[in-house]
Amino acid sequence: MKIDALSVRVLVSAGLVLAMFFLLAVWVLERGFRESAEESLQEKLQLHIYSLLSVAEMSRSGRLKMPLELQESRFSEPGSGLLAVIRRGNKKTVWRSYSTLGARQIPFLDIAPGTAVFVADKYNRFELHYAVIWESEKNGLPRKYIFSVAEDSDFVDKQVHKFRRTLRSWFMSVGLVLIMIQFGVLRWSLIPLRRIVSDLTAIEAGEKSSLDGRYPSELVGLANNLNALISSERAHLERYRNTLADLSHSLKTPLAILRGCMEREEIPRQTVQDQISRMNDIIEYQLQRAAAKGHRKLTGKINAAEIVKKIIMSLEKVYRDKQIVFMVEIDDSLQVCCEEGDLYEIAGNLLDNAGKWCQKNIKVSLLGITEPRADNCKVLLQIEDDGAGIAAEKLTEILKRGVRADEKIQGHGIGMAVVNELVDLLDGKLAGERSEALGGMKWRVYLP
Image (cartoon, rainbow, N blue to C red; front, side, top):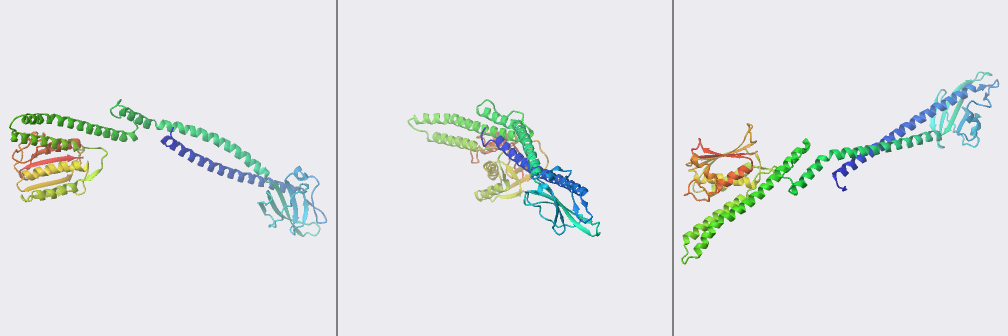
């Protein structure tokens, strides 16, 4: 599996997102558990203070007395980590547990009576301070006492450490399972892409002619475009092959005639000239047909109005002597899905023919088609002239190569054949009829 493979990228990305989520979740859960453990410790220390208050007694002399043995045995064990101190409001220590021997003293904290303060000191201990007012039986004077209980943070740290170890082991196990599931889902999701790659490999090897598999809806458009591209390239290759074959076959007869002329003592110049002209016509036609690019689904759209206007400007100069009047109705916003050269060929040949045949007027319309059509054509190019027109029975013939409507008009008779072929390649439609407005010929070209 390659590092730059799509499946690896998706898997690594998903793994990173999953790892970041787990790390954040572990941090949040650990923090929440620590806060919960500290709250639990605070409640535990509060119970210890209540226990100390329950056994504390005030002597007749006004001194606070504590029993020698407490209910919590850890107060009697030095180094147990559980400490207790009772002070008066003037910081004087009244009593402290045996567990404070050898331990750092609990700092004094002056607080208001009836108030409990839970803090963490600099010695890595949690402390709870609680202030009470106790009246002396001797003189009835109130005295303020502060009960302080502290416990090492090991209690909380051990719980958090155990929770962290359990949590991380579970998250790691769950993460590995999720990654394996993600890998399986990813492999299953990419099956259609691998199928397309396999089909393309089969097409390259000549085992298939197109992408004919069943693909998800998201890949149907891609498969259709690839099939259109493959068909277009094959059509181009086939057309080039046919053009070369036609060219070689068409040149055989003129070359044979020329060879025969060269064997004569007196070379017939007119015959040679006719054959040279014929060969020139054949070559020009074949080159134009070979240069036709035709329709491609992936070809970008071009502005048809600009191209038609450029052709009209050129023809105004070519037919300056005729002083042709061009009546133009063009939608400047129209876009046509084809190559620029193809549109030049189509519009150029039709306008040039109109210029040759017209008396004085040519009408050019480039409009959008609003009504839905079965052929999905969206643009109409219509060219009309006031010439003699073409008989209905000749409309089919002039679309063949080498056929001209009027032999007196100069030309090679291949322009309309190229137009017809290009329109067909573009999945469009070419229609010709007599113009009702001008009386001459009217050509309609429907383009996608």
